[in-house]
Amino acid sequence: MKSMNEETRQTIIDHATRCVPLWEIARHVGLPLSDVVAVMDAHNATLRASKVADVESERLAQRERLSAYLRGLYAEAADGDPKAVAAALTAEARLAKLLGLDKPPTDERGPADIHVILHPPKPRDASGNT
Image (cartoon, rainbow, N blue to C red; front, top):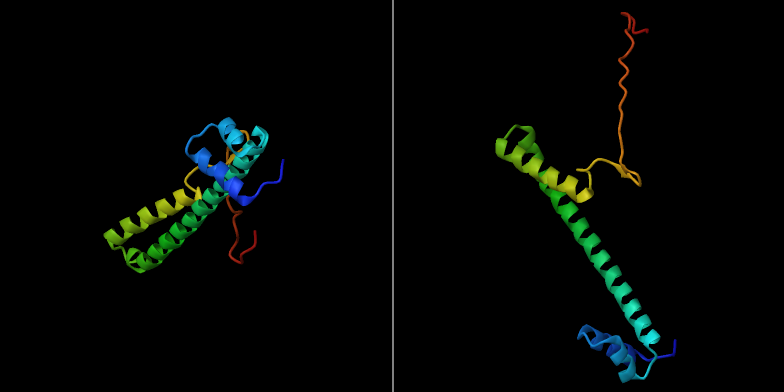
């Protein structure tokens, strides 16, 4: 790829965001089409990374807010206040969904089968021995 200055890069991005065909942009800036494509690929990768960071930042903020709501509701919900219980359950459901806890575990083959084997405790005598 030919060396290009920031002004040329910005011209390419500006034209592409206005839906100018890449071959036309290449002709306009005097660069090979492959260089224009490379600039746009790098720009798109930066946008994707930025969006992922924004989503993760929002997810963290929501998790903190929901946790604060639950802490505030805990005493009243524990005392049995029906409105507080309903609000706490709603916040917990939203938090579970946000964290992906509302779905069964999966692996690359699909939903995992989870089998829990319960072993009843062995009877103990009066001294606590089995």
